Image (tube, rainbow, N blue to C red; front, side, top):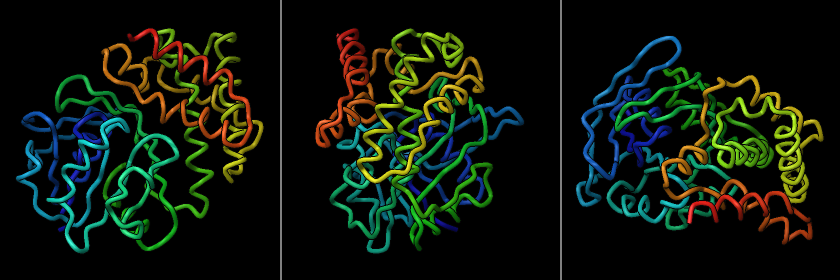
Length: 287
């Protein structure tokens, strides 16, 4: 049985831990005590009682570490690694953005796998999560990526390798960057049905496409329209993590979702005024 440590007990970490615990030895590394996990999906409810650790000093080596914290919590997540990482332990970085490979430099690159996840889920209380649909995972081709995919063989999460991870990461960022409209309007996915808002989303994505192409991604022009359509087809009450964090007054992943487009755009001499403006306004509204 594979030993897996999941750092983070939020919507993504909790959901992955619960599914993996059905077939593996799972430990959840969390800030606060947690009794168990309950995931409500459209088809059924699953429960799990993984080992819960709240102190990095209690951690022991495992086969896999899954870092699922928000990008602004990487330092706290890294505090768990000295105890969890053994000579053969591999690290999966399951976070937003396109810079997953750079966030835990203390782990050798050949033992690190960046992960793109599409898993609509919301935490309603500690250990209680609503999973809107099954979800997908994409990782780079190779032995390490294939080994991670194998962990999810007995779950509803469709994990696959891809030969073009750069494009996959930027495609996901195109979706994420548009989600800032929900945070600013405080409306769920149904906000995309407003055509004026939909056009703002398209322009956010167009800026992302331009920068992504300069970074080596293959992104079609039609992606801007596709992102709007995908959002419209989502559960109307679905709330993205940026929106949820803003409403709750928590720190936000603005840099990973929108700021990175502005930063890398500047590197390539590409103007990204809408991503810059929306990120600035959202940041200012929380002060």
